[in-house]
Length: 235
Image 1 (cartoon, rainbow, N blue to C red):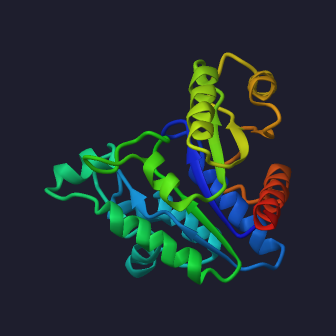
Image 2: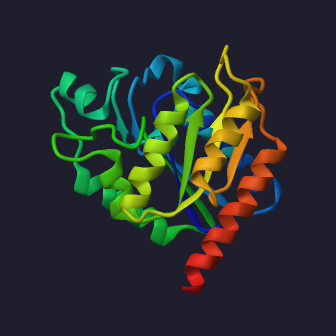
Image 3: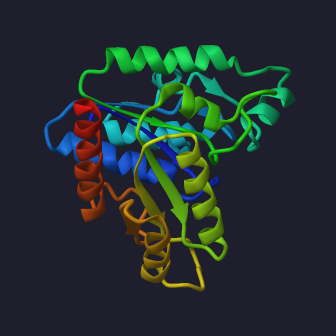
């Protein structure tokens, strides 16, 4: 596994939890890992430790200081909206070219494993002209697509997979993170999605306690991503 982009079908479905868990697993195996969450909406400096950058830094064993947060999340906005709307609220705009360059530099400088976590879902606007899909297309990294298990996720997930495939992006795996009070069992949702996206791997993650750093699925994900990376390098 070299570099990987973690995206999702929408917001609040578990991107940061999966990214942090995968990072912790890689570290436990004795490998070096760098994690970026370049764009963050809904960021409150007063509760930095519980924000996405704070959770990721904790997984890396690094302190939640202003400097450390700025290193992994240079574009931070207070409003819990799309980056385009959140930036506009502050009289700002996100420089898409600078965002892509920031990631490319990290890709070139990576020590071993690099995880880049996106923001929101695959079609969330970053500025007036670009979405997360444009960001992923510019980087062309293998993707982890995170979905929830809530009612409606089947359509959202299958639509996302279709869009990503149409843009010739490589999906390493689809991860279904169990949603609270979902009326459909997690295993049933995983099986249904797997039937429609075969042969893509589809893994389910049950609702786990906050701060959980190890689970069998993180090892499975690491192996899948390693396999995809090797396949891409051999082409």
